Image 1 (cartoon, rainbow, N blue to C red):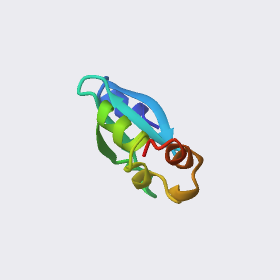
Image 2 (cartoon, rainbow, N blue to C red; image 1 turned 60 degrees about the horizontal axis):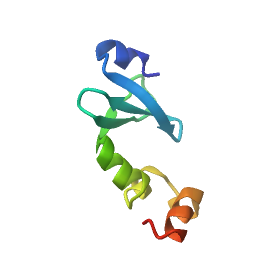
Image 3 (cartoon, helix red, strand yellow; image 1 turned 135 degrees about the vertical axis):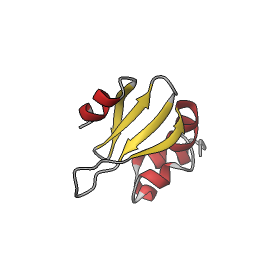
Image 4 (spheres, rainbow, N blue to C red; image 1 turned 90 degrees about the vertical axis):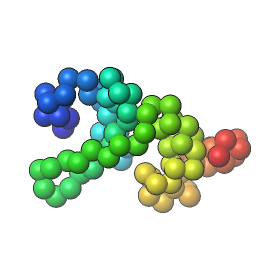
Length: 86
């Protein structure tokens, strides 16, 4: 999926996925991107901040709900709330 983009920019590496959408790290800038799947062949990258910002806000913070639908019953969100992390 990201091979085409990686050919354009060698600093992009896949570091995971969110709901089957690739999570990409630019090793030069440190920015994290999520590819959005559309019906067409274009896969726009959405910047989510640098790696530290992404981890603090999207993995362990309130912005988790922006990237995960039905987050209220999500086991990770329940874990974060139970342990008073978010």
